[in-house]
Length: 195
Image 1 (spheres, rainbow, N blue to C red):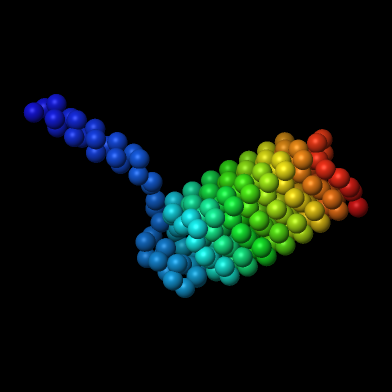
Image 2: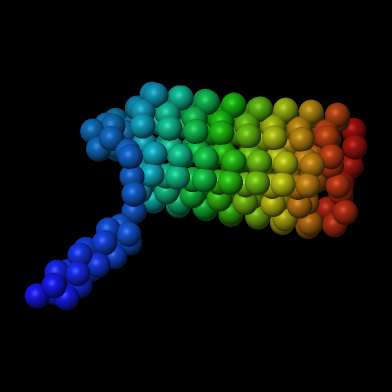
């Protein structure tokens, strides 16, 4: 009998450990999904993959550890959001507004964020492999230790950005503004030019 109880408890614990932990408020998730507005919401750990949040209003929201992979964030307002450790892989975010966004350790591999506003965004240690940032405003952004290998940064503005330890291998920096950038290592970058 004792062995069955222990086995049952272990089974329940194993199931619980396999389930994603989420602190997201279900009502706030529902609000975002229905009307596209959730300012200052707690959506941490929310499973929002493949969602349509085009032109959504999410200013100041907490999306730490959330999964937004494959989602449409075109024109969305994410000013000051917390996306620490979030999964934004293959997100479509043309003309996205995210100044001051917190994205350390976030996965943005393959994301399309061209013509976006990422001024003073914290992308420290983020995975930006193959991301499209054509014409994106990254002035004052923190890209320390970020992996930008294969990224398309043509016409992007990186004035005053911190690129210490960033990987720019095969990143296209054609006509990219690199004025007053910190710690930039252009080894392996494509067509890097200074204005």
